[in-house]
Length: 539
Image (cartoon, rainbow, N blue to C red; front, side, top):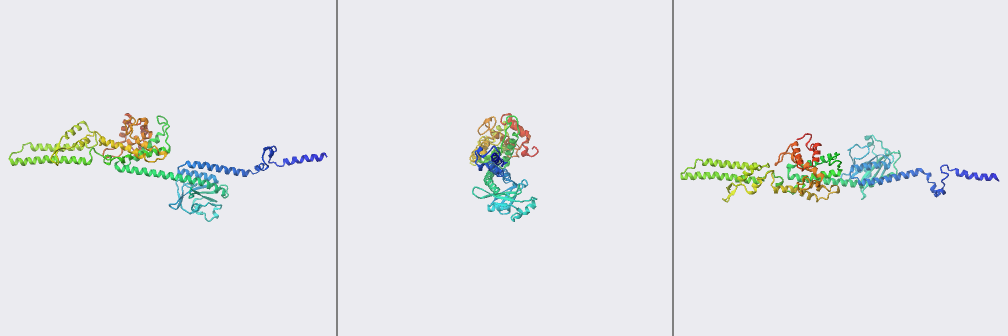
């Protein structure tokens, strides 16, 4: 009986040793799993496939989040392209955008496409064009066996296409906005239905992101168009300042770019984002926008007197001259009637009076120029102000009235105090106008920056007399750019352009008087920022 018992013991031992792939110490009972669960590890390939799918889906979620934050269309398209390549394990991918107005699809982002190259094809042409036109996925396992494939493309590019997968990208409305196209599965096999499903999922997210990026670009173009139109409106009021706004913007950006290079000093470590630089540019371009609210005759006033006023004065002087000459003729006739000769020096005195009238009129013309008037000029003007002539009503009237005398007495420049106040009001008008625009969050400080470009570090600027710490850094940079360009710009009726070195000397003097930011002027000079608008040589 011992032999059979021994045999029964051996059989179980053989059964337990049979499954070589199973650990003898981890039975289904010991792990608490069912027998079905215990058999799962038999399919590592399926598990690997599932893990790969989960990884790809997770990556799709991650890239979807990234796409919503990307506003640059070129960067967004590149991001989508690279992700599509990974999702379907393709050799090359391309993104085509539908242009329904032109009946075309276009791409400038594709693997193998030269930089800056852009391709346009009719809607419905090629595989991508058919996907865009029909809105249906096209999966071609063997490109050369499919009549829809254009072999000429491979001949032209030298690339050998084996298989193609094209899926539509749809916006939330269901409209096809583009096509994602993949070429040549890396494994050498055809693209699968799962690849199409994953690419469609990516395309759905990509379509919304692309639509948003295009919309953002359109808003950008709208702002650009508005700004350019505003600059045209400003400069049409005073053509002699043409180009001033663009030059101030370019100079201000030049200062900002070089401030970023500073490692020490009050502005060491200062950085401006792309949005910050755009905000600075818009503020600089629009800094004089408020001039549309200033009367044109004041805005373009070249001399102390308005053209019509000088003509009136000249007419009075001609009348006075004629009256004196007529007086001489009448005296001569009267003397001849009476037989009494005129005094010997009578005609000489007349000639002296006429010469004096001509000299006074020439002096008024000189005083009318926007130059500095010295103390002797004030005295002579006061003397002329006492002269009279006989007006059309036969009454004595001054050759120059009080208003004309006041304007001719302007000590410097061409504007009297009221006119200067009106010109200075353009800054307030600028702020008021720009504040009406619903700027995006990244441009919300445009009105504030433009508002402060005439403020001075010593608190004596206008219109609010801000102290140094209250003036935005961007405005301080613009102040330097504005003064420099106003000094060196081409001749204007009311001033001559000054050379580069003289302009820097004036700015340096402004710094010494505490009006302009010294570290920023040092950056302007040290980096030769003026060359951005003056060419390679100083004027």
